[in-house]
Image (tube, rainbow, N blue to C red; front, side, top):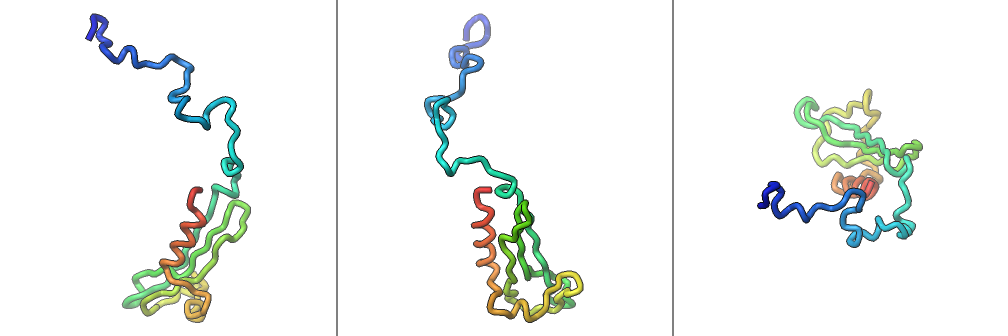
Length: 127
């Protein structure tokens, strides 16, 4: 430590206005041209609405299970709308709220929850 109290860290300061680690960050250099995949995201790329409809399971339908998953983007384009196979007996379809009926969950188009999670992850990944 020297008399000013700044010690050995005095020489490690960078000057004002100089970018930090410029040589290590080529994307921040003044003459860097971004590749096409680095184009700015639009509202349709970053804003989503995700909705899950639930059904009742267990005694009196007091517990909930995912029965439908829907994702829309900013422009209201539906990116995913699928029914989910419920692995246990459904005791309350909550049709008056969810609109879901037994035929929806028993259809060939209904998928398992792990499959739906993969779909959701692939849609929202990197957003």
